[in-house]
Length: 195
Image 1 (spheres, one colour):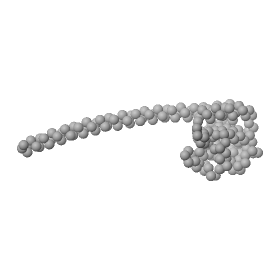
Image 2 (image 1 turned 90 degrees about the horizontal axis):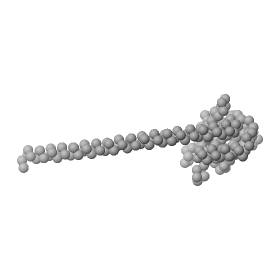
Image 3 (image 1 turned 90 degrees about the vertical axis):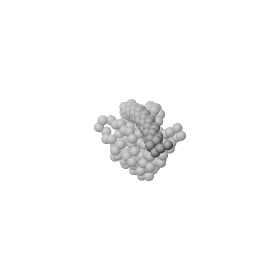
Image 4 (image 1 turned 180 degrees about the vertical axis):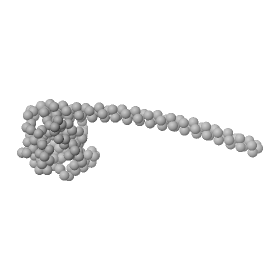
């Protein structure tokens, strides 16, 4: 074999290798494009489900607000969920003209209000028909009174393993006039729907 034939053979092998590499890369690019497209579709689907879930939560909170003639209804949640260090209001609905409580209850260290947080995490229900006479925690009492609260219902929300994931709080600025059994049944129904 002469040098010219060896050169042609090497060039031929090179062309075959480049063609194979190009085809292989093209195939990988197409698979990557498909995976990206699938991920975009999945994210769009999850986003739509999240939006549906969020709108359902607000709908249910409004049901409580209207049916119980409350002034505010909000969900107080510990976070991060695995290692609770703070509490914040995640969702809130209120009557027109009532001041929002959500901006005031963001990233509150649990260590600042351990008594009430412990009660919310351990008990299914807390009912304070009069914050003034029934609330023992002075810091929480002061905050709630300063926010115009007269009485509250607090319903624990938890996982199947009974881990506290938040509480629905129904806030009244005047005497609670709705029968307690009716109020508890409605709040329980909503809590189970949200969990």
